[in-house]
Length: 254
Image (cartoon, rainbow, N blue to C red; front, top):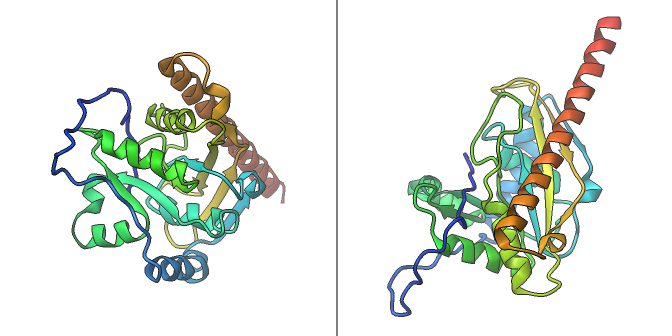
């Protein structure tokens, strides 16, 4: 699935009339399909497809409270690898994914919506999407948003969308002491287009406390939070590059 976050909060659209018939944005998790999908993915599909899956920093994922997992986006496999890496840490919480509106259509959409996905229209962002994301965090759920917005296979961290910061700040400011945390996650494959036997390295960084960015204007707060998240992802990516270079040197020496 090609998940994507957008600048859903870069504007304040006109309020929807109370008698409007527009359906609210919702998400739900099937009590039988979700556990089955995670079970098959964790114990069958991923171990059989990938040669090696290395995960570091799982202790950085909080086991309680509202959390946004913010991974880099390198392949469609990311949508399965994030739950694989985080499930033990957020046990008892079903991950909710912000996905493009096209992925919530047809048969694929049927599955996506029952696995915790909810749509965002990138071309015409809706305040309903923001509200639903805020509601999930207020309910202390675990939310997954890919802050780069799209898949990038060059291994570099691309400019982040500010929507993730604005959503987090909106939730934190709605409830004093809510304690929203953003967890930067770097996902890297041994080849740009993963195929059978590809290795994967997942580095989970330290939590960013959204409450530290509440003072000041929302626009500036979002800017600073986005910049710090980008810096954290870049540091994780740099760490991965150093590990890869070290492994290459050792391999050549042998």
